[in-house]
Image 1 (tube, helix red, strand yellow):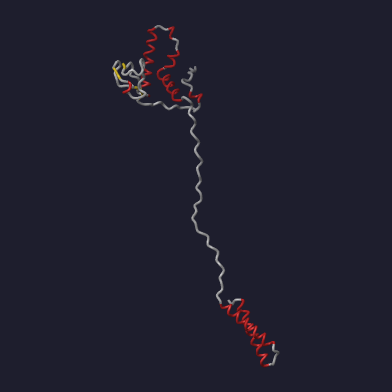
Image 2 (tube, rainbow, N blue to C red):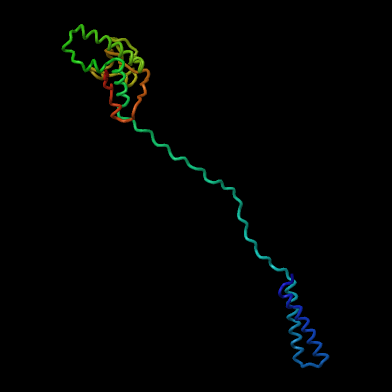
Length: 210
C-alpha cells in the first residue's frame, strides 16, 4: 500500500508537467514557470520521502508466562489440649491406694474403739495391698546401696540422695537409713471428665439399690 506522501507526489509531478507544457507551448504567463518549479520540488521531495521505510508501531511487550499455583487451603490450627487439673498425679495415686488397699478408709478410721489384735489384723491387709501398689507403680529401691549402721562419707554419695544430721560438716558418719528412690513411674491414666471437681473424687460413693 502506498504511503500518503507517495499519493501526493504523483499528482504534483503530473500537474507540474502540464503547467510546463502550457507555459512553453501555449505561451502562458511567466508565473507558471515558478509554479512548475515549486510543484516539481514538492513532488520530488514527497516521492523521496515515500521511498523511506516506515517505522512500524511498537508491539506491546508480551506478558510473562508464569505458572502460579493457586494457594493451598490452610488447615485451621488444632485447639490446645485441655489443661490438666492441679495435682492430678498425686490424686490419681491416692485414688489407686484407696481402690486397691483401702488406705484412706484405714487412715480415716477411729481406731480407739478397737483392740490391738483387731487393728493388727486390719493392718496386715492394708500393708499387703498398699505394698503391691507401690511396687507396681514405682518399684522403690534403697537410695544408697549401703547397709544400715555402716560408716559412710556423705561427700562421696550422689547429691540429693543423702541428708546429714548431727554435726553437719563433721566428716563421715553412720548410715541410719538408706532412703528410698523410685526406679520407675507407672501411674495409671485417669479416665473421666478433665475438670478439677471430677479429679478430686478419690472414691465415689457406693449406693446399694434394692
